[in-house]
Amino acid sequence: MKKISIVLILLFASAFFACKPKSNPADDIKNIRFKFTELGRETQFRIACDKFDSYFPEGRVKNFGTKAGIDSVMQLLTNMPRAEEGSLPDVRGKIYITHANNAVDTLCVGVKVLNYKDAVYQTPQELLALIQK
Image (cartoon, rainbow, N blue to C red; front, side):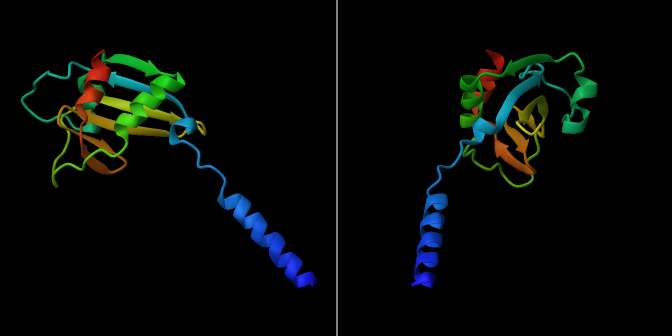
């Protein structure tokens, strides 16, 4: 009888923890900062992510620190379609996502594609519009 009650307690405890609601990834984010230049600016060669700051040291900066602002950006970054293999962004801006634990994700944004977590995605046009607002 003692074994049955221990098994039932463990079963109820595991069911309780399994039903815990998942946290929203945007809840773990403290701030999102855009640093960008003119998105339509053409250059004779592609600007790589690591060279963006040296080519455009005086870029404009836009911060999103409110929950609504963070949610709107993160919604645009969710479920982005992958870009064609071999595509690399011609970087016109960077997005810095600062998490609650102070870890920072950096996105390198081009007009057509962006780089996020070692993958290349098609840049959502709504994201470009939000940056330029």
